[in-house]
Length: 213
Image (cartoon, rainbow, N blue to C red):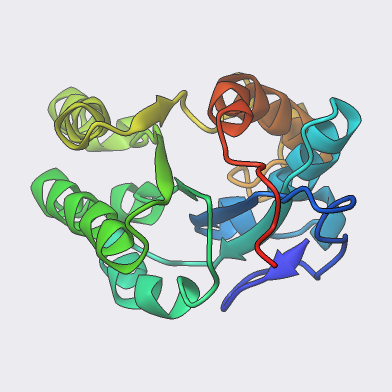
């Protein structure tokens, strides 16, 4: 698995077998994607890379998770990360906006601009957006508004929407590290299972044609 700026993992793997391409999947996100508190190979993008390999649809994963990043920070960083040709970008952004109580409308605008930036830099790249949720302490109106931006952005931009990243893990102490926010290895495996189930149909459609030359 390859590292991008701010990533918490190391590069492994080969480009593929023979003349068949191995698609590159970039996971672009926060400390939740970086796998804060875990070994690099235990972060959910690395676990997904292993699942894809085991199921005969290998991918080369680039983990571009960066701790503490907001959607505004992601927008500033995306051009640097996209120096690497990519077949699919999986965007996990917004968790830190919600933790800080930042405006859902600003987060929506940043997500839309983030998708536009990917398309401008790499027009053929597929995009998937991961649903994120706000903590309940900001009230029902805020959490509902925040939740809605993902379905609305995905529909408007015509990108795949993946389920809430921490579904079945958030708020369960035995599945999280002592900070109560980041999954432990048991929780991370659940995250990887959930994301892979939703992402696999997108991975199957990626181009694996013969490499040029």
